Amino acid sequence: MRGIIETAGTRIAYRLAGPRGAPVLVLSTSLGTTQALWDAQLPVLSGYLRVLTYDHRGHGGSGAPPGPYSIRDMARDLIDLLDALDIERASLCGLSMGGAVALEAARRRPERVDRLVLACTALRLGPADRWRRRAAAVRAGGTASILGEVMPRWFDEGFRARQPERVAATAAMLAGCDGEGYALCCEALAGHDGAPTAEAPSAPTLVLAGAGDVVVSPEAALELATAIPGASLSVLAG
Image 1 (cartoon, helix red, strand yellow):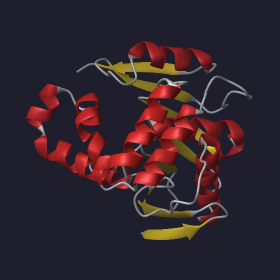
Image 2: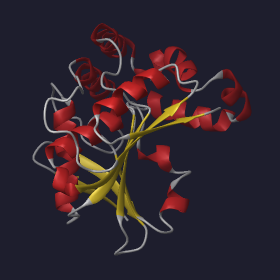
Image 3: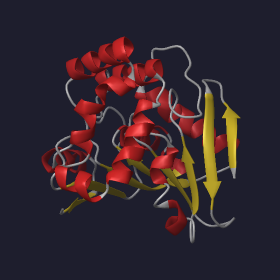
């Protein structure tokens, strides 16, 4: 099932798949990608879970309201989406920026979160100045202008050689992203600090990292896992 939810803050495009009555898993995407990022995982996960994917504000089929944006705004979008779909409780899996959003949602509304998976994310996703420069570059040249910078950071040389179609599809997602929406999300990341400022999430938490990730190092993932009481860390080789 696909649809659009009008919230107080924006318009959110979503997809809901899997058996009714099954536990709900929400998949939250990275900066510059849409819910199509999860197409390879959806057929497997929706066999036994009720899987909700969605586009962040400024991405895909969702709205791009005037800025500024914050990670808290995007966490509120997620909670509003759950409210609109009458989902009382769900597990959250967030990738990169989506991980920051999932963590913020779990802190703000812990009673709504069953389990939490934070993938390739950190307390701070890079220096603020880098995000501000990225926002300025996209406003000047569009998201296609940063493909040469971003894609080698997302996919190493071996992966690009083995799965060029997957890389091309992801590049097309980024190139098609609304430029102003992307820039506003960059500025949200520039202003974000995930160091605990409120009660830590109470849900069981797994932090995932890639051993060769040049965007979020295993050391940054360890820092995140250490900041969340009881969280576990898994570093994936290769």
